[in-house]
Length: 177
Image (tube, rainbow, N blue to C red; front, side, top):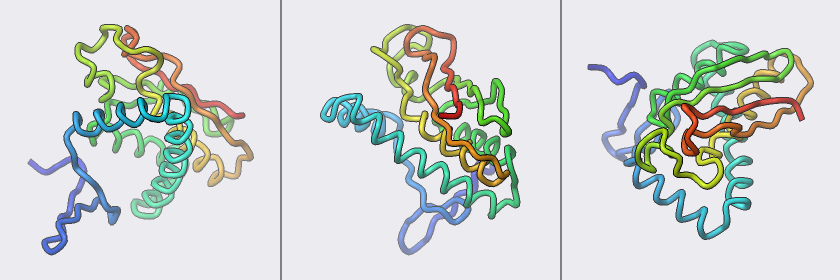
């Protein structure tokens, strides 16, 4: 069976790439354990701000690169982004609603890697939102879409519902500042 995401491995360096972008492949527990260790060391507030900014920039860059690679435009780039995230083990992402003209979106996340790493999905185990790492990603993607379509907004995004706190799924809300 072919992977859903194309992976090329350089025989000399061992570097994995997808669509020309270097990739890393690590076990979920390794990533989540490191994530939780940094959160504990820095504090959730400081860490979440740093992740938001880095995630925003990374999503913006990714959308630009993938639009060129695949000839995509507008919201189809954001949809492609959610699909690729879903194919890479972060969870299953889908739009509840999205409007490129206004910069508003609600994104549903089922089977979040952060919730699954806690134990039984649906059992409240998080203090606060567990999946906050994704928030900047969605603002970065929406701002890329808005800019390319000629809209003048800058968005913010936040996790507004978390399965780690007992909800059926996580929700991220994107809206103009």
